[in-house]
Length: 151
Image 1 (spheres, one colour):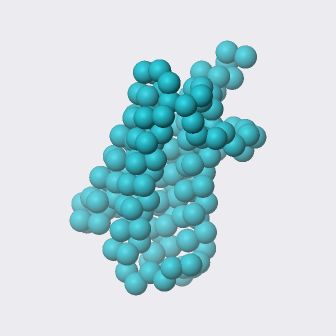
Image 2: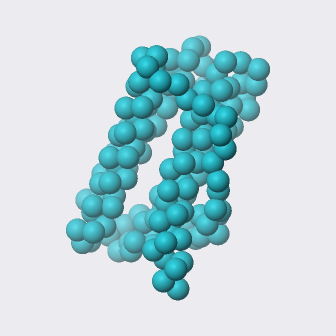
């Protein structure tokens, strides 16, 4: 695991992760069929850009991240098959992919927090993990509303 020298190192890493996630969703939007799916992935990309902007504000000292409030986890994504990104994805698969991606980011930050127990960086990592948990919850709620209620 990478050694962090400062809070700025952590935030730079997190900002890079948000940029990569935005690029992923933008690239995926170019591969799917239909305007609805394109818009869905472009909206995901915009959300990731918003997360990057928030992290930039944290780095500038204008806002803080907190791990105090825990985010609910519906665990819907835990029971879904990993979808392969592609042009033939439907809305259900797109939401499943987004949940899996956000869960992976949550796990990454949680593991990073465990690696720096007793340091000031721990709180930052836990705050970042909670941000990712919020994103996953958003997709789970959408899945519950749009997919599970239809069935």
